[in-house]
Image (cartoon, rainbow, N blue to C red):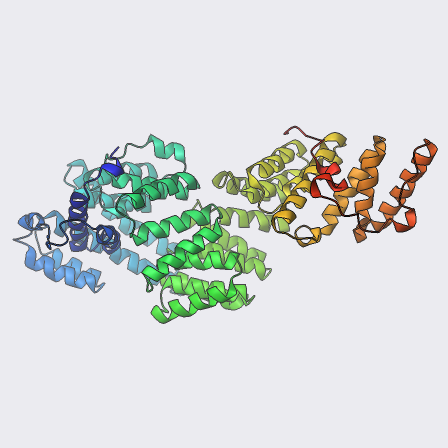
Length: 593
């Protein structure tokens, strides 16, 4: 594997410029843009001399066909694909460049026709799909013949892989795209197509990738997609440390990786710096708006929506940002309208279907939400939010076997996300599969419970199963968790962080548990805490009277406080020696399920 730290940046920059030009002459604008971003950020000693690499090699095969190529490429740039095909058909297509442009123009013409037909209400969807597949199969046949004769270069192999993927021949597409990246490792478009065909890390590690430095960039992208964010961030950081510090693409990917790991503050910081460096950038601003939506940062989201609208109001990212703004204002009809507009602008926009599903959920339109989530999964089966959304819809419909399956799929994609584990545990509990539910709640607590509910769910489950020691330990840890969180936030009122009902339940159970164990001091302190909550105030008083009676009956020393003052606050004491800490000091420990 090529080591990033030992790269010759002058050579890397020259390779990037050459590859950028190769993509440009073939009309591969997205790949060319990515390479240009990487080349621009590299500062080398050759920059001062104005060194420009030689581009003569590809023209050697184009000299005889340059005029027809130039004409066809002009029509291609104007998106007049059939017109480009018409003039290229009159050429012998001896060059790999003209052949690629000919086949690529045919493919894009079919994509354009399909997109228009899908929006035509007078055209049957089935006939559109069948007609589209029939035309793509013709391309596949022609490219296959060339492939068998080994006459396809790296770019034509990329197009062949795209066609195979379109026909759902995924294994063949993977093999062909691997051939492509071996022949043209700097064509980023081929790496992106390969990315969508890799379902897990095991499959990724089984692939034989080219020994080229850009493989690291692909691996980082894959790790981020597969939720291995620490590994992704480590690779991106190594690029930043070795000459790519000013690369906007890498900075954006780092922000996305922070988003995937739910480090929203770090993601926002990176996006803010990225906008300062590239203020007219629209790429990835939809993801930035998603983060601001989750953080409920209405002011910053409004500013972002205004900014992107000023840049280009007809970009899918702009529509998504505006939709998120309206959704945060609970104007779900308007939000839905903008998400649908984004899909009309780009039917392949991956995240729009998931977000449409969320809006339908807010509007209580469960049937439409299910359809939107299913569309999202069809477009991108690695979108855990769509699987999770489907689980929620079927849970609302009381179809718990279905919801359990979809929660399980979401958890497979986000194995260390406590929200997925809690939802999965809740599904198991509803189906009376209590041992599996316990394991899910315990793992959710172990990986870092972002919602703070896993311990309470686990404690209630132990209580339901009459596992008293385990339940008491779980309730104690829950109280400890609340106390620790409140201390970190310097909040005096426990109700500000966790629901008072849950805290009251925890203290009530512990008071009764200690009472059954004849541990009257612990029971007294837990019962006294019960009186701080409206839900258990009367029960707490009754428990205190019962404890006082037991102490008198056993000849114990009378309580210092009378039952008339049981609702008074505890005396001032240090946290370490407070009665509360006697309950939550960790006397109980419970074994993982």
